[in-house]
Image (cartoon, rainbow, N blue to C red):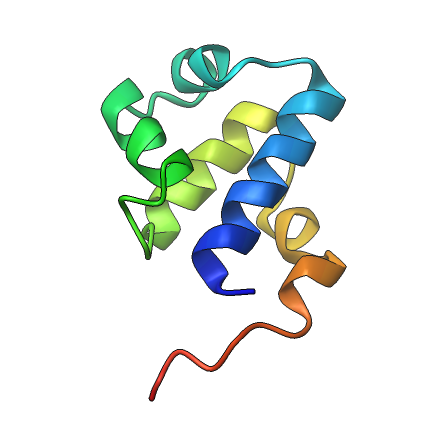
Length: 80
């Protein structure tokens, strides 16, 4: 799995757990709907740390909690 898919999967997990829609996440985090849509549709392959921080804030989780997941343990090598 690559980082983009891991982030998408983790965001979906957290949204489901918190019962927050993607649109609700945009409102809660202050991240534009187009940015979140691009992340979720794999159009943005490397969302910035500041964007991920805002999304974490909107989900009321720390970045440590966000990345402390087995999804991020065995990511594909990004440099070819």
